[in-house]
Length: 526
Image 1 (cartoon, rainbow, N blue to C red):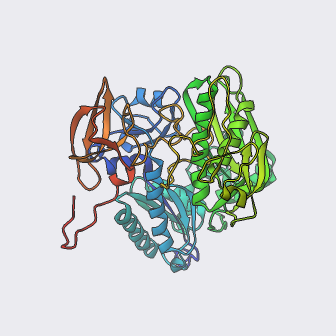
Image 2 (image 1 turned 90 degrees about the vertical axis):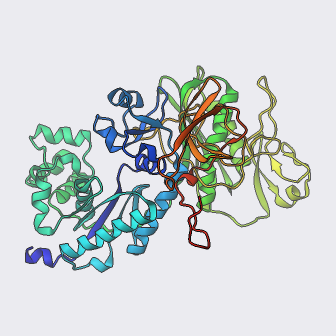
Image 3 (image 1 turned 180 degrees about the vertical axis):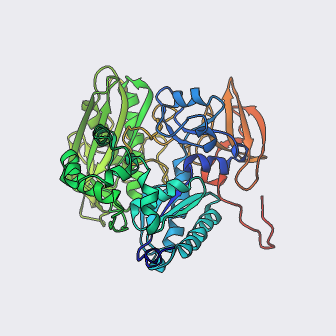
């Protein structure tokens, strides 16, 4: 190593979980450990959210339409995403990184940057030893593999982790930077998309090394001063961007692309209620309150309409937010059906303390009412109050029957405390799966304690009173086949039951990952 390499003052690490969604499925469903797995929507509009390395061999990849991926890899097992499980494991990964460095910058659920102070001024071998220990800690905590890249800046660390995949480590010392980066395509740089790539190709520039050799004036003339200057610096290995925690989200949202267009307003209202509930779970977890509700609706011809409403009073009440979203949907949804519904909550602030006034839904919008009146059960114009004194949205009679917001008094399936499980802030774009069934926001099965799903679908987590935890391999014609296995059990056996068998109930996906606790005598209980 050169003197320059020994005196490197800065080391940034980038940890990236390998094929995260698919790896989680293979870990918790051991029968799939060596098989091609695709995670995402199985319907005609489904998109691959994750592909195992065994599926990638056949050309299947994330962001690809599921129909195309299945044509390329017909033997793949297709599973719905279980975002609650992915999020919980992601939190464990970030906790490990937080123990290794005081500041962690998450990029997504499965990757993050860190700049450990202990590595300042270290040489390559010390960095490698640190990264080896970090990968081992992640595997011990989660059971999953991770790749780590290290370099003098975030860009180089990201490139190094890509070179390390799968399940590897790559440390790029300063004296190796030019050699490593020179031959890489320009698309490997942050900020180079299809348009910039096409413009550079017209000039004969296809690699990072060629971009680094260009005259800065030529680069800025093609890409603009701000973008061109930054990309030229990155191409030459100059990257002093700090590792910093991500700022608080400005909005929280959830949306669904339906397998078939929704044409009935009752179905739209049900979907809006589910979207609002999904966004609300994250709102509560983050300790935030929302002033603005926005509903987005996309028709079959991809025309998109949105409607928003803002109140002076921030709210965390699910019934209030749902009622507003459903009212907005009536004017946002086009004639002829809707292929996508989204609900976002914005104007976020800290969850407010109890106040003299709260906002409740009425036919005219959000109405400030004294909290004392609600608690006392005093009737409020336009608002239904049940005998328990809880304010809820009014029933809206119409040709399709009264509409009651999910979670409001008199509704079925009012939500109780549960782990967050919805994807938030995800627009309809490549890489985000369409749900497997119309109106399901996150692909996760119902939580434990509710009525079992009838009929079952492939990928559901279930529990049998005799056989324990398992997952649905297939269902139809009144029968369901379940393979009973978890991370702790190893590959399990499959049994077929009547779909209505009372011994089968829905199960928490986390039970497939969490290892059983040791008994007091040190024996693991199964």
